[in-house]
Amino acid sequence: MKRERATELLQEMLDRLDEAERPLDLVDEVHVFGSYARGALEPGDLDVAVVHRTDTEFTEDVVSAMMSGRDPMAGMKRALKGNRRGVQFQFNQNDNLPEGSELRLLWKRGDTRAVAAGRLQAMKVNPAAGRAPRDAMINQFDGLDRWIPLPVRVRLVELLDAGGIEIRRIELADAAPTSSVAVAALARRWKADSPLRRSAAAAVHYAEESGMASKAVWVQGQPLGPRRDQYGAGALWINLGWYDFDQLVYRLRQGAQCLEVIRPTRTQPLHALHLTVHDAAALPQL
Image 1 (cartoon, rainbow, N blue to C red):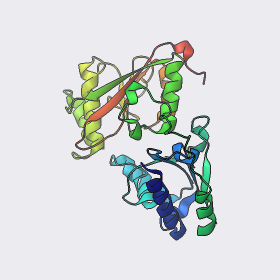
Image 2 (spheres, rainbow, N blue to C red):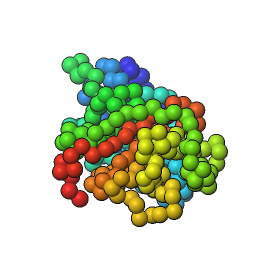
Image 3 (cartoon, rainbow, N blue to C red):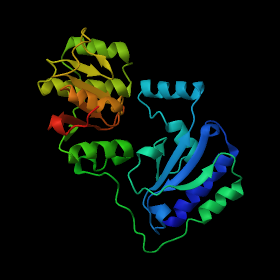
């Protein structure tokens, strides 16, 4: 992306923030980081970090989106950028961004349009600043990083580099489980056309084909079978769209495996990361 186009995207974003239409009335701060903030002439994607509050309506919308397999932050993204492409957002993740991200404040609640425009203008061109490499990237993330939040990538790479885990990338077959119990359990939770149901079915089918379905399988926080006490050694946790990711290390330390379906979708290919323990002693203490 040329810097001029990135600047235009930020100017349009400031216009929308100035209007403060729902849900932008919840936004407190907007920061720019990455190549654009460093002054690159061709920054690639525009990296934007947003700090926002929540309320009951917003929370209900997020939960509804998650239950139907949609991006829970799609409404906020659309309000900030319209239908423009090329912007990568991080929401309420400033403390979890990689060291050296160099956040530059663009806008904060109470700013006039002129004040925010002045901050944007102060982000000067630096011809020596090239496009930054994508942070926390490994081969398993290649082509999928836009659907793997940066803090998630950072955490997984830390665990991998420490020798604690192994990461295997899988393209799931678009297939249903053979177990009638599993089919019935998924049907009770989601409608037939739900991307979550399609993704869960493909993940359970993978577990069956891999010989893991005879053990305890949990899908989106719920067991497929009747027992709720088999969640540690030998269990497989299937998570859709990074559900309960903050529980990853705890589950791995208990001897479980995790299958993270990266982007639940109705029609597109389903990619997953199969996370297993390599050396439990290298996992962080809880």
